[in-house]
Length: 329
Length: 308
Image: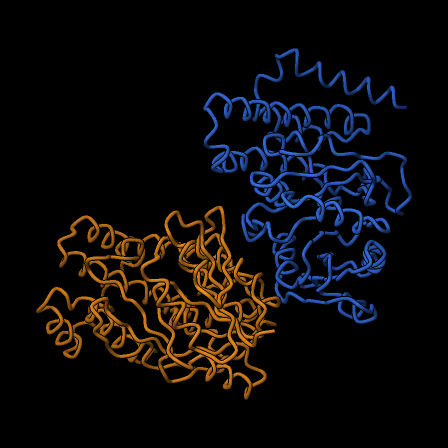
């Protein structure tokens, strides 16, 4: 039986997949690579069938990322499990290092690390998140998902204890399962990059258009599920309230950013939707965001980034760092 | 690698569980029994520690039946999986018989047997419920709600889940109908007449499954719209899809009226009877004026009296 399983879910991206598969194979000694093809309609199947050393699972009916990851979980046999997106790249031997860290900390169920945001042009910037908290991170993770999905290694045993991924919340299914894990178990974090992200560029606009939708989904999840977890229920009212406030503040920042970046790209409608959502959800939070944004360092970063259009993704990453470095009250 | 996995989700019923596990053990030679404890708060964990030769998995937070079954599929290492509720029983050798059939028919997704109805003390009532289908392609019948498949009587090829996905947690209580329809879209179905399980029927007064049944049927008619979007159904002519929809709604509302008139009213239970009729009228307002609506009810009533 293999020591670890890397589950790669893919849908109609045969040009990126081989790179992800090769990187997964080289990330550890005894690793089983499972490619779950979520009903691709192109040459993905033939590429996978000609790739040796992988387990190829083909869904005939599209299940979405979470559904496909669940099918990957069922097909996996490794004691440690990691997910990788088809457009990401795992760094060499990174999986073994994370497994070793988990071995040394038997009580921890999950290990995460940093991701290098690589712009599609190949340019690299600072790893995210700039700071990786560990131990009990339940309240921190409720506020914002700072765990890059591809960097996570979990023990097989914890999947059964918290349940599989929820396929009704596309886009935040990973965040949801991490929350269920960290509610019960401590985690370890490694201050080193283990994957390279193919970050969305202004041209590809991947994901960003869904921001407003995701935020609505996240808010519902927060209130209806995460706050109903025994850990949150047993906490004091003040703690819950503070978590909700920090969560809302983070959303407000995100929406402000989204509005500005949309306007800069000349997408007036997208900007308007974001601004509307922002004002509807958090009329008060806008002020605090603006106050924080007027700090000199933020403005300088944004201005230098604003000189060239292609640097927008870079600026976004830098902005994220500023945010994660900012002390939380 | 074991041949068959029996997945038993359980929640706060340790007194019944042992019996279900014993029946599962006798149902096949090479069987792996997976008990998924869905966040029980009582002595279930202790009761399971007494049982030997089972794989005990505990979900720390309640997952619902579909979620617990999915955990069971995740833990299973066998080629075929069967779901067993903690209060039902499997008949000795039944899984081996069904596994043989799946071995012989490589394109079959699941095999469905008959079940023996029993009371709360597992005493057979004499009634045996057989699948109303000849086998083969059962997609349209399942989609139309014309072919009820009980998970208790079914053995599923595990490969199916990697083609159609796992159970849908969003449709609690009809997740079984959902997955069997999705499997039948791509695979053929085997039906056998032999009984394979014992179903512990809820007592008329246990409350379980009275108005819950009406809600379940209502949910099913709503979920059918989603299943009609499965590629094979979507490719059918519009006329055929409309006909399937119409027949399913009629079947459900007739069933509801039948339940109200023949089950609840004679017992003097007016509120579930009313709930059933209300749902039926909402789904199919014309049922009140259509003679056919009563014809089926009358026919069923005569059948029932004839049996007595």
